[in-house]
Length: 273
Image (cartoon, rainbow, N blue to C red; front, side):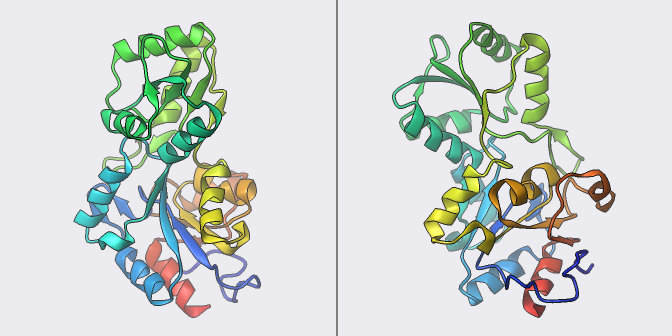
């Protein structure tokens, strides 16, 4: 499938991107399978010496989990460069809430990544609350979290995704959990890290010494990956291998610069422009 964009038949007047950011779930792999063009794209980026990083909102796993999954799927260790919404949340907490006690409602993997970063974990007497994508959610944890919310503690969510793509279809993600919590307590998060918030990708831009507009964000969700275009000023490419469908573009306030069936389409565009 060719790129569906006003630039699809012509080179981008801004030039080719100088770095790529790749979503993982629904973009690079789905379940336990790589999506078309995944490894070929990495080979091309390495050949052209273009920096890249994987970026994911999924906080049910930590970076070590993703590193293991990517390398198991055939990605070289040197290419398994990962930045997560959990990393962005940890960075925010260490900068803005140093030493505070945190109740993280998330998987054991996410909680362990917070501990390793020096975050004080405390479910009984926290100073603030963090909600992650908790695929190990129990009613007991939910009750504790909501009671703390009713006491007025600050509430941070790692990311806003409604669904997580899977071979079975979309699965309830943190956005569904936030909706459940809001119905019960009347509280929305005071702050949401992760896509589509600009900070998660601006951190990468600083590390690369690039301007946001020199970076291409590629992903499968309009309201997170593509929303970064307006929120962070990056260029965006939508792939139709995950959550979004072509017909979703009509009513979406977030419009990608490019649209491809999968990463193979993006690779062809990079080679031919």
